[in-house]
Length: 267
Image 1 (cartoon, rainbow, N blue to C red):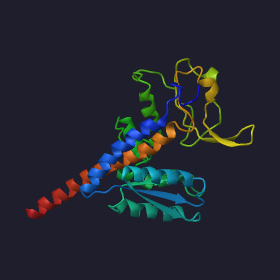
Image 2: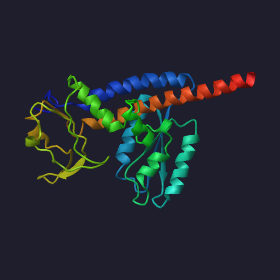
Image 3: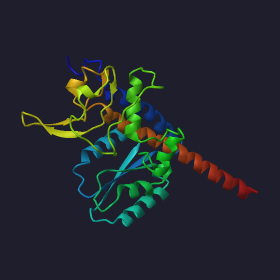
Image 4: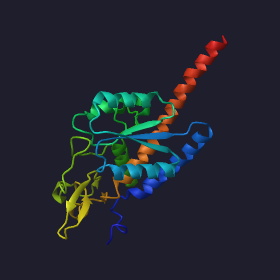
């Protein structure tokens, strides 16, 4: 049975399409009202490793009616110079959201850059304030990969409340090809694989695999995400949905601020 016919596979494409269609409607309304959404991507140094991601983000943003701009910086830029550039984007009312492509050069701490992005423009959900909001169940700007995983879990139809969850991994980008074997998985479980790893097969061809030994685990689990084609497409869709959430928050702030200012000026 192929992956396309196997109901055990939680495929991300259809879910991503639904999210992008909803985003497109919201973006069209916002643009008509004079608030066109715009996403700015920051890449630093040799971008060959992330070019495919940036191209995909641009294509999906255009499909959703969101402007997309890539800002490239030299590998020898200092952390201070990059922070200053981010602060400039924070102050630009034409910029709705900012995404920092990883990896960045080793001399630039990624967490410093993530903290430099204003929380209102943090469409990746990686600013300390955004992470902290999760504790208070404010989830509308959650980290994209985590939110994509939840969207796929919803596709199972399971009542998620009270279920046991095991999270394997420590950082945002960590992975070991085929780490999770069938004997590590509870029968009937839903397995969400966010790993992305290159593997050279017996035929010498390079292919993308996750952190789960899919072929063995799918015979134990009730649901499993394919790699590629599982979490990835939804992650980009969530990024675009977060961009519209950010725009909504910014509009509310601008209107509240300038509305008060106008009233005070009139008095």
